[in-house]
Image (cartoon, each protein chain N blue to C red):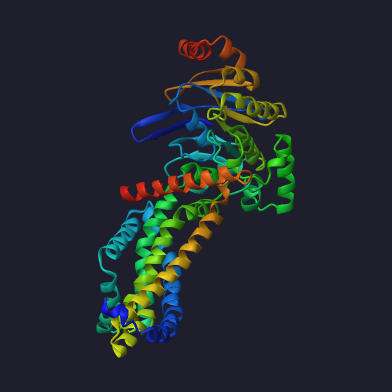
Length: 245
Length: 254
């Protein structure tokens, strides 16, 4: 993405954001609350409309935002990216399996049998094969988030977006979800990850972007930005997160 | 209490079947037709009311305001006695169906609107993010969840409607109350016959309330636990109540 601007009313949430994620790489977005990182993610998924800027996927679509950009153009981004939400947002009236095949069957019009077979394989991978016929409320938070991840994977997106996937979880359930994300990174999925788990970001991310006040303050290889940040603002943030007391 | 000792049981027995028949061939079909059509109308009005297009939303608002702000009897009379003066003459039955449909449309629209708004925004976004259109998300994700929340208040509307159809007797629709009136006028036994009519209305409503329970239980299956009876009943108590509070908050905020 390049030159992305976004305001809510008078409040500028994103100012000229340029980001690039190479295929098969993982980008972690870190920064304080209100820094605009979630908005970046939502723009990539067409949930927000930037005021200006361009978002390009290899192999399309390429959308340049102007006031005249149509909703259809904005929404075309969704066909290449899939989102995992902080609060899971599973469909409570559908079983685990129905949650996963909803997109492939209803939107992508794939044969149901094929979608079910794929969904079962993915559920098996994250250790939830036996939960396929349960409703979301019967699962723990960690299990629900793994279903959320499977729901995104089932769409076979070019880009996976994670919006603080572990923030709503009990601490002891975080590990299961992070393990799954780590495995996906190792398999070569392209991902953008908004997270407060710095240790995890260091572990899985190839590149880290630190945002504050709607701008990119610092970016670079994960090891550099998280171990030896150059900017004073980044140093303070990283220090604060690693030493809360 | 003289009327009680003089109670004409034979009259009660003889009038029961004609009244019940009036209920089954008049009251119930009138209720079912008006309620089904009214729900469709209500869904349209609710969606208009939520719409971000101002004039559309205002139109829905005005409609709801007029329906809720005028007596049902007046609405019924305007359609049956008023429309002929501008050249539209309708038979009693269609007049009654139209009036009750418009009335249900206004009241249920607010219930449906509140139910739709009670579904968390994240559900819309989850639908969009898997590539669904607005309409697909509404139909497959939001309305099924809103349906569960709206069953108790809509059941209220439905049960009220069963009783309100008695007003149609005033425009000569042969439903249960009109049958009661006719027999009462003939026999002069007003107390007995009107109480009998009341009992039959009550029976209808008892059956409907049981139906509401069944429907609620069915729609609650995804919030109820299948592995523990205790948990199930606890959740049944808690969840719909919470949902109802949300609906009430939205209604109050309007």
